[in-house]
Image (cartoon, rainbow, N blue to C red; front, side):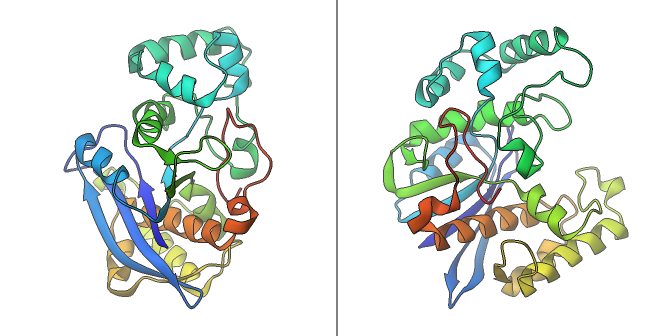
Length: 266
């Protein structure tokens, strides 16, 4: 099985591209075979449709909290929700989310999905720091349009399997230190050391998911990349490998709300 980890961005460019780490499990070790960058959505849409069999972990929210969707009277089934998102702009979505938050008390502004708590992820409706709602708006409807299968949510092509992944969950299991910044002035030796610590732990299988990584020729690149886009793609790849090992147990996913989705490995 070909495995992929996708570090997504809501506005890909050559400077800040969608990054894909690819590899396979060989004798129980995850071997990293390639890293690639995709700088526009047309190329990403084509990549999503490339022939399987493959399984990929994507660093973007696949859905929104049921509480929010009920309040907004938006569709309560995932395919219909994705189609709805294509009919509104990012700005329109933000205004509706902001109105929802403005009416709620301090400390409880955002609604959360059930998966956010065990994964430690930001609310998928959040539009700032980080703007994961924009990632959802740009990315999740593309998964539906590409016809992939998302276990527990939508049955598409069984040879192309997509799972929601969250690299921060893996990184924080290894170190609490900050390991990345898109601001070059903040790409410090301390953050580089944190990336080296993460890579070394993955090579030993020293994470709760116990997948051993062979980074091969890409090891230095994973550590040197101050934005950690490469490393985040590999962390998503690791979660994809963990899921593939558990394909007979629904990819390690618990019983979850098919509208909200679930982060693999949480």
